[in-house]
Image 1 (cartoon, helix red, strand yellow):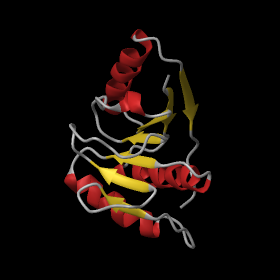
Image 2 (tube, helix red, strand yellow):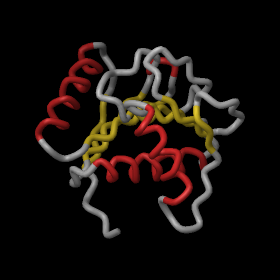
Image 3 (cartoon, one colour):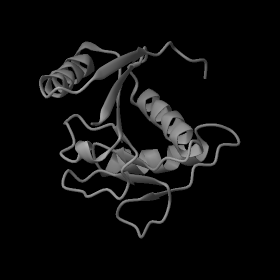
Length: 145
């Protein structure tokens, strides 16, 4: 059964979610796991693609977009009906529960500060809980940039 973790950010800016997603993708990649970053649309997918090249000095996370021919361990997509190639870690940045989340060993939900974002995250949390998934929550402290 998919293990689900919620990462609650102290920052409400959209770039904070992307930075955390990049750090989590890098960590999973370095542990030898495949990663699918599920963006909320093409604009966010593009920003993720750019961020993975520059989120940390010296970082290298081989990645590709889902709409490209990919052979990389980290893939970025945004289509709700996608059939992601990986089965390792799914990082969800979309507002809805991805229909394919059960194919993955781990699901990471990254939640910005702010009542609106937290409210949508609570809905996803209830969705998973009501279906019997074990859930864990991590409160992330603000980082110096």
